[in-house]
Image 1 (cartoon, rainbow, N blue to C red):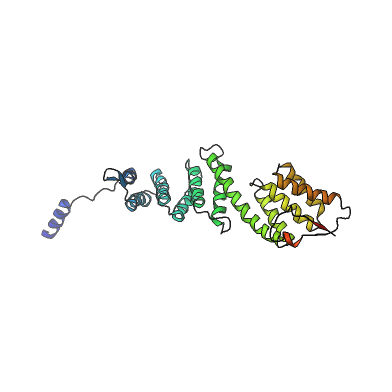
Image 2: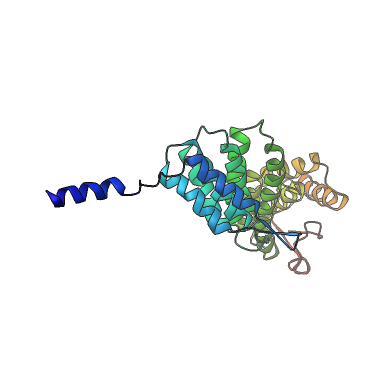
Length: 276
């Protein structure tokens, strides 16, 4: 009896369990941390890990609240601002997948595109980040054509596509210089098919036309050269295309032509041609 009374008294005097802060409180705390604190009156010192910890508390304790959704995006933004692009991209990707109808999906697509855009390499390097940026920007433009971010995405998409086109064209130019007309034509075709609006596409068409002519695909060569002229190329390219068309027009039998060795090291379609 005495023991029972003692236990009851102990329970009665035990401090109540601390109530868990609300999702809004955790989220507000994370946002407050992101504001940082003044250092020497000028610089802001932000404890990013602490902010992520607060947002993660929302996700862990209130996974079905709107604040949990916003916390996912906040963590992605923190990684982005710290140039931790792989981590940021993972969060943006999951956000789009898990919340396809959320008003912030356009924002997540745009930011995910920027993650890859900021990692793009020169045209002669691996273009995996460029291709991923293209995929994200295209998704944004197709799904949200009226978004305030779409205009900028269109500009960046054009830059990405030009870089991918140039990557293939440079390889095509190498094959052109080696008189490997089949490989050169294939590269030029891919650039024109996959990136039909890339810069200098008139040049690509001229080089494709010359390559096709060397392969004795004369009808296709003429078509490519005439399309190049319709694009209004510069004087040198126009002269090259017109010269090639004149050669085609004056050779009823379209005999094979051999590129002079002096032109092999410089893939220039305006080089003089020898006819056999």
